[in-house]
Amino acid sequence: MRLTEDLRGRTKQYASKIIRLYVTLPRKRREVEVLGHQLLRSGTSVAAHARESTRARSDSEFCAKLGVLLQEADESSLWLELLKEDCEIDNAEIDHLLKETNELIAIFTTIVSKVKRNA
Image (cartoon, rainbow, N blue to C red; front, side):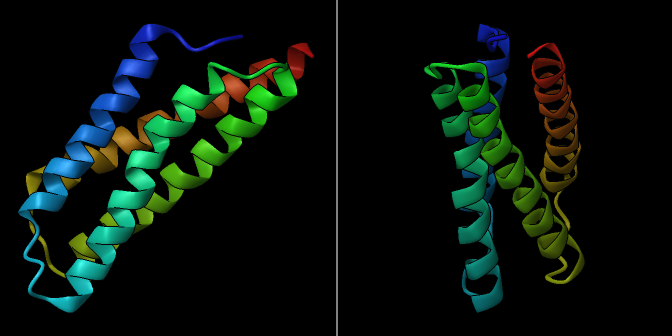
């Protein structure tokens, strides 16, 4: 199983939204800067691993790359939650990104499960 162009585009759009959120964060606060940087790294990594998965040479390599993608997405969810709850960053984009993160996790978990089941 391979990723569709729509799904690759969706992860790239997700990374772009992460970048745009990062630019708007009040980075004068040290904790926001640290969490924002972590989010920037993990959120953009989701798209990078989606793209890498398209070059997988086997189903097991494909699943491994998507496994890392899922770890990065889960980590992104944590940073978003901490920015919202502990740093009190009240931003509608954080809510949207949390929703999108959960949807991407569900989609990629399903893909990995189907590939493993069919292997």
